Length: 315
Image (cartoon, rainbow, N blue to C red; front, side, top):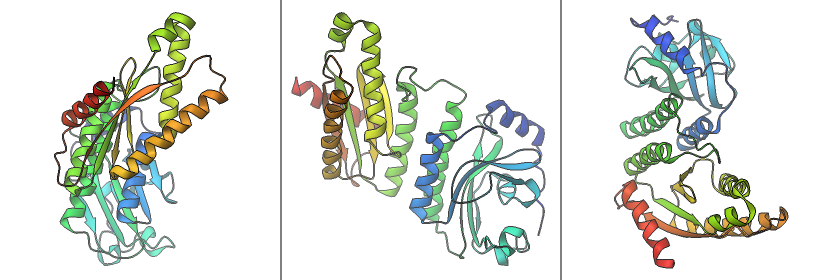
């Protein structure tokens, strides 16, 4: 087993990592949905977002049973941060860097490992997105590209930790955050030739609720709708509040038929939840839908404009 060396910019790298304040924090859905996506896409035993501190590898998000932290000298990911390029290990038992590693010879029986370095906004590599498997496997160029696409999404989430991208009222992404993450999701879908749907919601009567019941009740109605969106759509979907009463959902890898079914179920959830909470008003909305198949153009503005036009046409 070969212990990982230290990067030449180790001090700057550690400072950047600590500046993020991500170490020893709790689970966050925005990262968990990306590890789930990676694990499902490659059918791997494990998918991990981890960071390399001065003495340890610390895991922020994972699918699998990997420990929350391990010593840096045993870390595969400590090798991955030594380059800006992906690290692909087809069979760790045949790789002199890892052949005698406890994760290879022990009960975990790690064989395949693929990692893409995660960079801070200043360019230093602070961690990696990795997938693991107990059987050797090939990992062709198109799979590497797709894993890099997911890593790009992780990096944008890290960048979001340095700037405010969350809507204070609903907890959803604000317009800036949605624009960044949605376009990157579209870029990944474009590479993988996956269909995409976008739903644009225009809430009705928020002004009337404010006037009749007060601004606090209007805010509660908006927060209530944001909560319904979180529960009504998949964890991998990108949810945002674009303006006071305008919401949007980007759904990757979903057919038009499936999207219509999802919107129908969501409408039923809104109606049911309003009755359960004994609201003094109805939460009503218009929704516009745009969709692109695997032969289309994956452009966020095009999708948004098409969905907005459908809402305007319905008024």
